[in-house]
Amino acid sequence: MHSNKTGNQGRRKFLQTGISLGAMLPLMTNPFRLAANPLRDTNISLHPLRILILGGTSFLGPQQIAYALKRGHTVSTFTRGKTKPAVQKDIFDEVEQLIGDRENNLDALRGRTWDVVIDNSGNKLNWVKDAVALLKDNVDIYLYTSSTGVYYPYLGHDITEQTKPVLKVPEGITKVQFYEYDYGVMKANNENQVITGFGKDRTIIVRPTYMVGPGDKTDRFTYWPERLALGGEILVPGKADDPVQYIDVRDVAEWMIRLAENRKAGIYNVAGPASPTGMHAFIYGTHASFNSEAGFVMIPDYEFLTRHNILDAIPWIMPVGDNAGSALINIKHAVTNGLTFTPLATTVKDLHAWWNSNDVPEENRKKLLTGENSLMAREKAIIAEWKTRH
Ligand SMILES: NC(=O)c1ccc[n+]([C@@H]2O[C@H](COP(=O)([O-])OP(=O)(O)OC[C@H]3O[C@@H](n4cnc5c(N)ncnc54)[C@H](OP(=O)(O)O)[C@@H]3O)[C@@H](O)[C@H]2O)c1
Image (tube, rainbow, N blue to C red; front, top):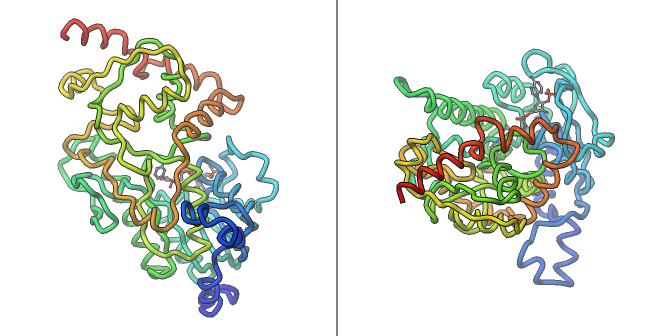
């Protein structure tokens, strides 16, 4: 079945002693650190793992690798060799970089054994099916990076891991709905393929909400630190208490490694902040990190916002219809199992520093605030109209 090193006996032993040396030492000397945060440490693990990351060179992967190496694990990545990391670039010398293509060439993975495979790039059904078939007898644990997208449409007010994902895209839906369903349905079916192949006790499924921080190439969340750092009169859509959720990519990455170390099979939602947060708290919190001269024009009127096609400004998503519960993801299970949260100020300052570094092309920076699709490019006119009505 699995490699000798990770057979049943070895696994049991691992469970009993799997807590890292770094976590044990402070227990003896400083009970407060353990009470507050039992698993967050960057010390060397007692049990070095051989980790294979499918993907690994984009956003989440480099942070997983940096933490895994610090903890004493060895890491192999499997990619086409096209995507170049824009963060943690200096650690890749220590990584075995396997080249292939999930579409049609998995040769580099054949005949090899690992303790854990982390599948970050499993965004097609046949990619995950083939990887599971090839690795199930050669790897102990399969950790699949899924998404809270499996819960679309987000209809509940407390979405736990027990909420059943939709497994088939329904007929007769809008283009926008199709895009949302398609991603969630793909992720949910891939989760099931992993569970079927590896079995529940060898599968870890992680479902993150929007991951943010250095290396985020999507520009979505980045709008806010950049807009708030710039200052001036700023349009803020949404009601004060409209819920927002997001998570620092490093929190997800590091916690995933600890889940693997501790062999925590199961399904986990991942979102932050630690306690419920509204849009205005997020805006004030982010602005406080930059302290620019700013005035806020809060626009809570959903009808007005819809007319101006402002339906989201991540982390804010208008909480109506299929998106009513998109930021009401229950994270108790993850927190109980060691998820920790970087303070918002650290996340937005680190993101701001990375965004304004040489790792981001100048044209991306220009597009974010002044491109034609940017909210900032439209906000003056919208604010003027809002003011004439109110
Ligand atoms: N970003 C978010 O907010 C968010 C939220 C929830 C869930 N997620 C999930 O998180 C995961 C990680 O996201 P990410 O942004 O870090 O990575 P990603 O962009 O999804 O993955 C890219 C990685 O896959 C490799 N890759 C792409 N095509 C390949 C192929 N045909 N064969 C082999 N490798 C291939 C790329 O390298 P090459 O191009 O060199 O091949 C790169 O290393 C994804 O599954 C995503 O769905 C993301």
